[in-house]
Image 1 (cartoon, rainbow, N blue to C red):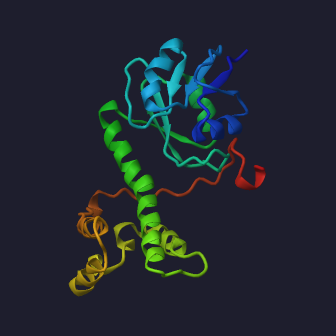
Image 2 (cartoon, rainbow, N blue to C red):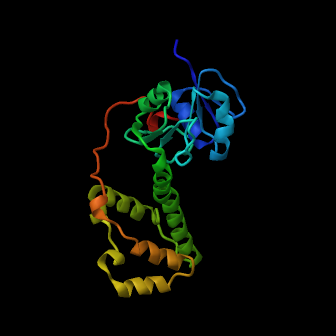
Image 3 (tube, helix red, strand yellow):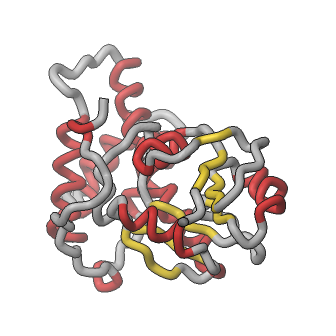
Length: 234
């Protein structure tokens, strides 16, 4: 009989994965038998994981521990089951096979991430997710503070189409005054911003993007998986 998997940690990632896998989701103080997947804050991983050495893995994308392997899904969780087909799963260390099998059955695509690259990998993830969200929320707040209320979905269509264009065309999908080197527009826009947004605007706009280093965009996976789609989840 296959040993059960239990997820410890009831945050967004723990709840979503436990629901998708239909396995127990317990607090970090629990001591379950079988395989254990830790969905706890980085600061708690070593302390909690010590109790399950040899049958445990954690979900952190940044932290590396020699004794506790990691499997990090490169996705933003909201606590509910989504379609995770094609989402990278960064594996560092000897993650127990049943845990890898369970996650890949949900559509995650496992790849080996060397420990020395974990911090860089996670920094790139933060730039893509957390920082991008901060930029969108900050831009929305700047307009609202000035009394500008956009109709419909506001800035969301712009964010969606920008990401779609970059996904389709890479660096060639970028638009705007920095791409065109339109200095008059850049200066005019920058002068409309207070700090720290003015510095952020100019720093990001001038950040180098080496299009030669960008990998080709892979085709989206369309095969079946064990994950339920949004329409299948109440």
